[in-house]
Length: 89
Image (cartoon, rainbow, N blue to C red; front, side):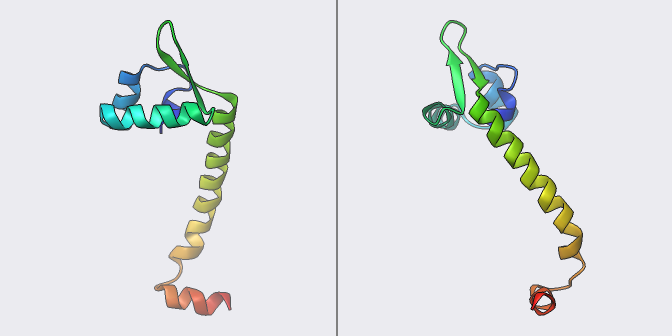
């Protein structure tokens, strides 16, 4: 994830390496994240940094991942979606 890669500051090349994205796609996502104030770029050294808003997104994403991980054992106890549907009714 780009926001994770830019936590401590990262160049576009480092972000491309960390995320396995092409230069074109990385540029698109960097622009998008900057426009939404999740990422900022230092003009002098062209380092990208995650903003406070970006850190909030990372925290919320982490919380959601933890929640879903806790649900995983519940879903894995059922052999099929139908069995799960029957159980929750």
